[in-house]
Image 1 (cartoon, rainbow, N blue to C red):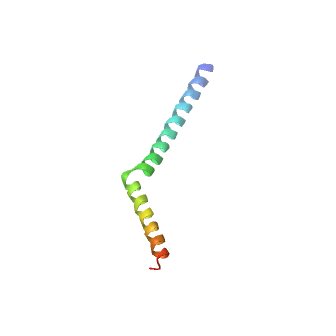
Image 2 (tube, rainbow, N blue to C red; image 1 turned 30 degrees about the vertical axis):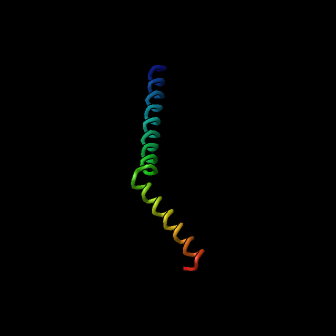
Image 3 (cartoon, rainbow, N blue to C red; image 1 turned 45 degrees about the horizontal axis):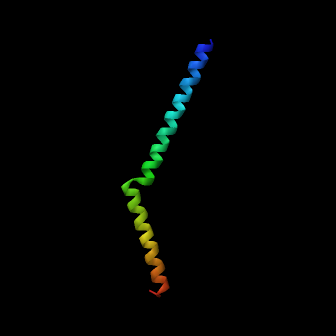
Length: 58
């Protein structure tokens, strides 16, 4: 019975590690993909232009 319980704990740990890895890869891709970086740059550019326009009364 101890071997079965130990195997179950090991299997559970492996499944949890795989799930966390899967979620981490998804977060990494969404943050560092070229599309996400492009979107972030465009948003920063628009914010900078808005501040510039506000500063010079445009």
